Structures are given as structure tokens and as C-alpha cells.
Image (tube, rainbow, N blue to C red; front, side):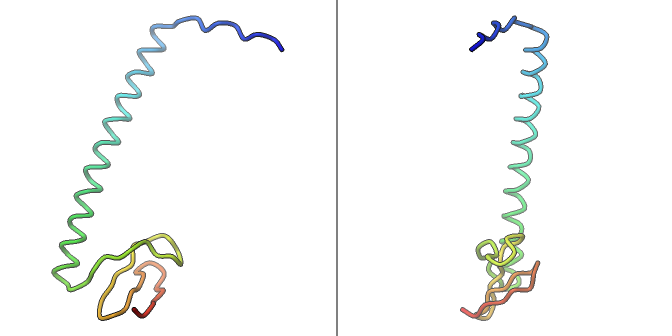
Length: 83
């Protein structure tokens, strides 16, 4: 097996990676904040409309199910199930 050459430190490359990581971290935190805001908004709209937000759809896995009047249904694929 041939030994790998030692990594030669490159401060400029390290600074670039560090800046990219900081940017990704900032973007991730912003996306998480928006996701929380949307989750809270959807829950409030559901309460206003008398609908509960259920679990992810087991049929298409592309939306959360909605529960109303003893029926759980997926707004994305239309799959329905009586509770």
C-alpha cells in the first residue's frame, strides 16, 4: 500500500472553507426558523378551520395528513382513512 502524502496547509483554502461553513450554518438556521414559523401558522389555521394536522401521509409521504370529522386524509394524494 502506498502511503498518502501529508496534507500541506493552505490558509487561504481553510479560510474559504470556514466562510462557506459559516454561510451554510446561517442559511440552515434561517431555514429552521422559517420552518418553525410555518408549522405554527399551519397549526393555527387548522385550529381556526376545525382541522387537526396529523402525521406524514403513509401513502405518498409528500404531505402531512389532515384530520376532520373522524376522517384522516392527505391533501396531496387524496388518500383517505376513517378513524
